[in-house]
Image 1: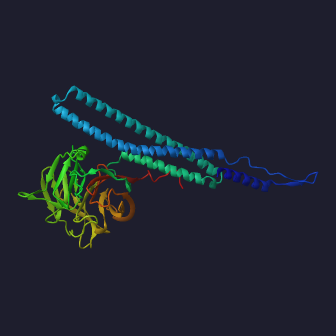
Image 2: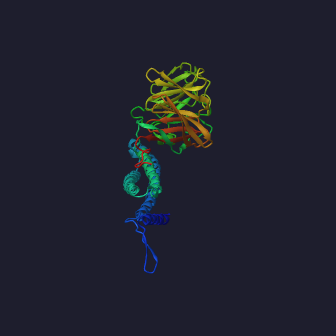
Image 3: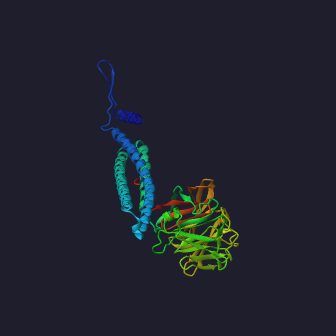
Length: 466
C-alpha cells in the first residue's frame, strides 16, 4: 500500500507541475521536447513507514502489560491467602510457644521471608508496569505530534488510516491504565463517575460453607459499613428454600473459605423466639442484618451485636411481586455509598418497582421513587452512588444490566452492560461500597465481580480528536 501511495504522490506531483510548466519547441532534428519540473519536496514516506513499525511495537508492549495486570490480580489473592495463613499460625504459636520446636520456628521464619520476597517482587513488577505505561504514553504523544504535522503539511487522506490506528492504540492504553489504577488504587467511596462501564468475569470462590449443592438459596458478602475492627468480616446465609433462619460470620476471607466460623446467629428458637425471614435479599450494615421478615410481612433488622430484632411495615408494600429468579423476594435491601435502600412493588404501582430510602436511625422509609420497570421481569437490582441498576437474563450464560434510575435527577435510562454468569440462575446480587465489588450467590457458589466506572477525563477522553 505504501509503495502505491508513493507512486501516486510522485505521479500526481509530476502531472500538476507538468501542467503548469510544460512547454515544447522544435529541435534541429524536428523532435518535440517536453520538460516537467517535480516539486521541491515529496511525501516523507520513510517517516510513515517508521510510524507504522512503531505502532506494531507499541501494540505488542500493550498486550504484554495488559496480561501482566491480570496476573497481578491473581497473585494478590494468592499472597493475601498466604499472609492470612501465616498470621493464624503465628497467633497459635504465641498462645502456646512451648508446643513448638526450634525447627518449626525456623520453618515459619523461612515462610515469612518467602512471602516478603514475593511481595517485593510484585511491587517491583507493578512499578515496572507503571513505568512502561508512562513510556508508551510518551511514545504515542510523539507519534501524534508527527502525524498532526504530516496532516497539516500534506494531503489529509494520506494520513487518516494511520491516524485512526493510533487512536485505537491510545484507547487500549487508556483501558490498560484504568484497569491498573482501579485494581491497585480504587476510588473507594468516590461517586464522581458516570456510572458502571464494565463488569469483570465472574470470580468463583467455592461452594457454600455447608458444602451442599442443594443450598441454592442464600447470599454472602461483606459488611457495607463495618464497625471498627470488623473491616475484613464476611457473612453467609444459605438453605434449601427461601427461608432465612440463620446467618454466619467469618473474621476474614481465609476463614470463610476454610469454613471456620466466627459466630452463627440463629433466628429461631422453638422455646424463645421466631425472628426468621424469607427471600434472598438481605444486606449486612454496621453488624446489622437487614432482611424481609417472615410474619408479619415487614422489613426487619437483626442487630448481631446486641442480638435484638426490630421490624416495621412498609406502607403499601405488596408481598405479591418477587424477582424473576426466586420467590419471596418482595423486599430487596441494598446499601451503597449514600446509605440504605429497599426495592419493592405495590398494588397501586401494578407491580412496577418502587425504590425507598431508609432512615437508619428511625428505621423508616423516608423517601420513595416510582420506576417504570415491572418487578417480576427483573433478575435483581442493586444500588451504586444513589443509582438503581436492574438486571435481566440474556441467555443461560449472560446477564445484563439493562436499566438505571438516578435518584438525584429522577432520570431513568435503558442501557446494556452484559456480564457472564457462572451458572444459569442466581438468587442474590448486591454491591458493596467498601471494595466496589458485586457479590452473587449463584446456585450455591460464592461468586464476585469487579466493577469499572466511567470516570470523567479518563477512558472516554482521547489525546487527539476524530
